[in-house]
Length: 233
Image (cartoon, rainbow, N blue to C red; front, side, top):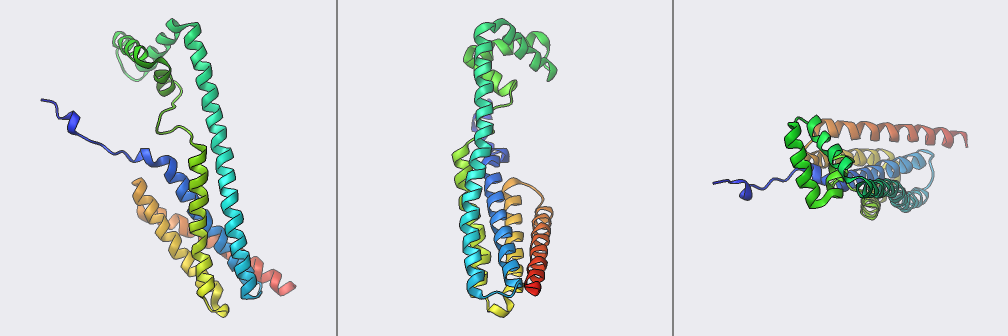
């Protein structure tokens, strides 16, 4: 008796849509806001100016992330819709050719030609467009573009990420705001890298090292620029 019906599998690839947007948003929120705060604080401005810059960075960044993700993923969605419309027309114009084309795809994947034609016949009898979308175009339920989901996820996670260095700046004494925000932000980035790697099944040490390195580099550069401008002005 087959045990397949009771065998449930949860593949991590199903998370790729929201996970990419979430990690990107949170990482950007931490790095950009922390860098902005560190840069402004290094110019020896008041704590009020630092906090205003941080809040402005949070709001502007969240809106920018939402707009950027929506436009980017909408372009992908438009391309998918165009390809599906073209495939639908080709199926209507010459379904025999399309059936053979699908069979050849299976052949190149290692299926014996006669069996490949049987598979193509059965797949197209159920849903011809879906079969071609998945096996010819590479469009599936998992990878399909979702602009609104990507925009909302990126904006929300950016705001959450940006709130972390902003909170560190708020509770830090003005004299040590730069090291406090930098240290706290690197800690948040390390945690984000570990959580993202765990959710995606990747290497935790590698992901953690990657995000903390780039975060440290961004804050170091902006701190140097802020200090230079503060000295000159």
